Image: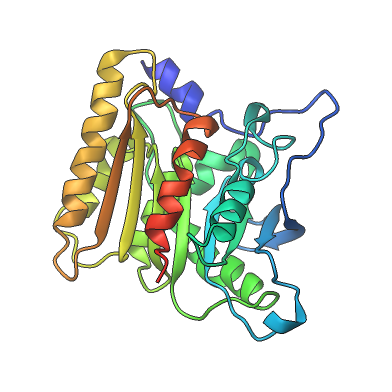
Length: 286
């Protein structure tokens, strides 16, 4: 089990591309090089703009933002892990065209490759890797608050106030930790296949007797994420525990939608298949 979990959770840097690839981006995606001081490195920010953003008639319009981690995997199969992507651009474009979703901006924040776990995890993952080093993910909310969010707000017409954040696997842990510690910044979250084993379940203890959190949280998980049935049962059970803790929040408990997908695996295909439901739950059409 340990080797399997370690392979899935820890060795997540974007797969090297060796063959020519045709980009699959739908709509306007602006890729900007970004250098941060907190983690002292550079990465790309991938900013997807909704249809009509550049139209003169919308020059005064400001848009809500969804910040998503593992930005390489969101919009383009050419940069996605194993040539797979979340298809966020196609899904949101379709929902906007159908009138099921109001226009919004999505900011994909690239992971740091081999330093992904170091930046994302607030606690060591000793379940998957007993020899893991101490990570630095407790600074990830500050990275968002003082570097990424101001950078985006200075360049794009974003709404004021709290926004949404999301991620999968280790990225889901960084998103959840950020939403829990900074509900003033994030009022909604997409938590996909969260690696709740980190800190030997510390985030479950952190959410027990939680006082305040974001207003809306989507939690998705498959019942077949791993090859071992006992691992799958434990993974789903941990998600159910998280759901119960979130719903018991003392001050204005969040609306929580938990989806247990039959046959769902731990991959971009599963997360893509649940994204339409997740984004409509976070941003219900008024």
